[in-house]
Image (cartoon, each protein chain N blue to C red):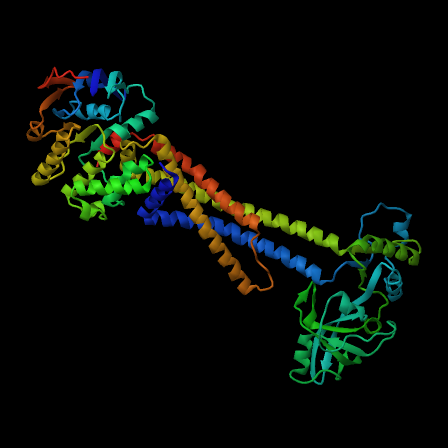
Length: 402
Length: 229
């Protein structure tokens, strides 16, 4: 029997019993669709996190006050119970090295911000003009913090889009004076809304010079320091420079934590990837269930079609051909089901994207391909039993009854 | 053409052994017209199945067209069946989802014959069976007589040497039955060996050679001695 004829005959048999075919296609497409959607969401979450980290800046090294590392109890651990503050001077010292392109000290807090009779709480971020470049922010209007001595507490601020909207409504914000805590600041710029970027909602932010923020919150310490290396290759050198400088400035003790963006990214990437795999594995169970369903339904189909199979034998079909026919039928079912499942899954991905536009759902090719592969494999494996039963069928008995 | 020697067929039902055929020997010359009759349970169908290579004898030997086919492998038996034997069943056994033309072409499909030649042979067969205008109809759109004609066409499409008909008129009204028998006899007249198994004495008596089976044995053979190879 020619392969084309085998396929045509199997398709004809599938078309001959619509309900059965539809049910099996449904089961298979649900299984494959589940894999496609779940891996799509997992991959979307991973891409989201990776993009978030990338939006933090490129070639970034983050310096945090305090040492978050397990160390043995030595004399030093008793002497320095609380870590020294990370100061503005520390930050400026970190900038003085050829491998460092930019440095932005960051001080954060919450303060009430008001204009006229309108007031609300806002996140206040103190930094230097370099922050704009480091975080790739964009201005909607006006300009960012002024260049100059970072230790000067200028009474100027840059507000996020949401703050501008809620305080000023349709009116001009640039040049107005807002009250931030107990001080008045002149609005010199409005940030363009770029959505969220890890922990900070740019829309809901008031940016002031770092010295002003320190004065506002009455602290010398910085929340962290962002250091941008001159290139990807310069990151280790910059990290070393940071540790050396900090040790020198803090009396030989390294009481800051230095995180490179890459390492954080790699960790998240790994965690989310394994999460995706786990979810895909769970979804694959539904594929196996679909396979078992195919087996059951094919067994029923074989017993319903004993007459036809017996006839084929009487007309000279070999056992091998009957086997091929039934297996092709099971294979076609799972293949068509898998194709439908891919479509259903892709629609699911699009649907999710409609409701959560920030998550870039997209099924990786390997996941879709292996889902189809598993579908085909289960269809064939679970098709073997019914196919063997069909091929062993006794044509005499099959044809003698009606 | 056909030679059976000491064929026995024993069925095992539970722990009971049932002897369906007991030492049947038979020789059929090419182009002969045989009827096999007998009460139910006499072994008619078993004999037909063994002749059609659908069943194997428990013991004895079977030659078809000069070759010993008793010990052929499953695969070779299937091929012999496909090429040398045509079956006509009481219940037609047409595949319900296929059209008349597709049903007739089924043996050609199984034999792996290319579509162009398939179409040509099927069309010629449809014409000779006066089914051309019914080619695209499914079995449930055909009358009983047309169904049996389609079934005979399917049995003949591989140009077999032997045509085995199991109660070919059993499911037809008398005029369709007469038509079907007429068709089979016309084929026999063209040289095909025709073996008809039937209950119906009227049909059975039309054959030139009549065999009567009782309890798995040949009780009567009107043309015994026709020992042609």
